[in-house]
Image (tube, rainbow, N blue to C red; front, side, top):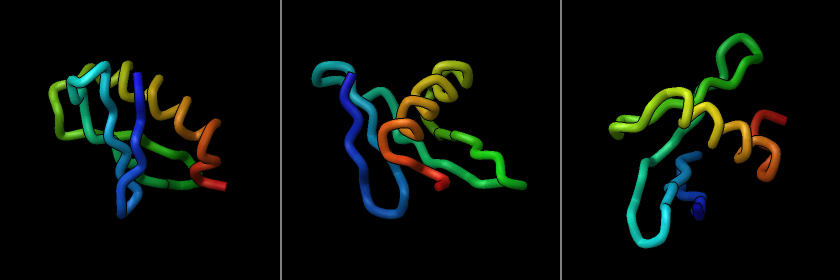
Length: 60
């Protein structure tokens, strides 16, 4: 899996050459919520989002 940061806080997620989703975060009451408009399971979105947070220091 490869994640490419985009402008505006969006992260484009690929598996091989297939785009899985565009993820974006919403900070709500000091919690970071990960969302997408793509057809991806929310648990998977949350898992990828946590990995992005650790690597990119999102929300700090």
